[in-house]
Length: 315
Image (cartoon, rainbow, N blue to C red; front, side, top):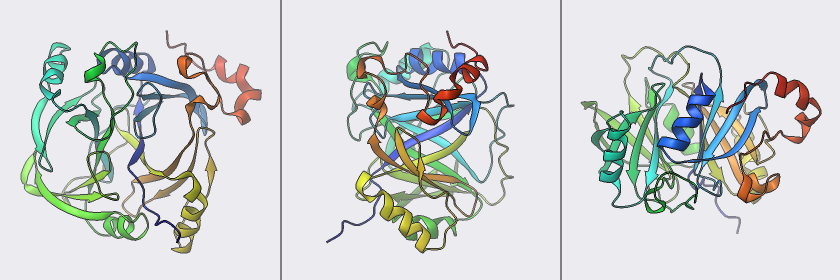
């Protein structure tokens, strides 16, 4: 019997920064993540694409950034409005003290019955820490103690004007299932709907925040570009056939060198990617030296001199 097509969690979230140097400083020094791949946007080679993750660049731990010289995002509808990061059980108070000492005190809130710390990065990127989920691999050079390091991605929050038709796409196209609701911590009269992948958990959820009165978000620095769901390598072609069979206008199969992708912009404007676990970030760098040099996908390598000339060194 063919295994069912069900994503098994978040693969990565890609956001936007207008300052790659300061972005690198914050996510490695303050949050303690490892830069596991320094490359460029494959569709716009003038822009850095930086991947932060656990030591091994484990799928599901990647928070990535495009560098574009754009104004700050204006939050609103039709957007991915918050990115969660998972930390070990029992470390929430340690992180509260750590973030407060860094000058950006977090706010304690409850989301889907779990305690969270909500905070922003220096560009206003809306982040949240939550305990639990699969363990990551600690990075020995992180400034954060090994037993307190970020494991990976938690739930992504979408802000939308309507629940339907996004839920129809999540259920029919991606086989997510509704698993409950909870009051919005920012406006308790508003309800947030939880959709889970498989058996769910903080690593395998999307939270839908519905507010018809909000204006549309204006994309920019401090905002999220897209999110990606993890799919099994051997089901990649089947996923493409499945989405095509539903009549969805997707990107088709896209080889990103470190993983393979399929993109679809759901009816309310949020870009959702499916991404495979393999081949992984060690396909072109030694695991001990990930992120130390500029790496280009093979089809871009002939243009290396031109590409490097257009980039500002990060250090």
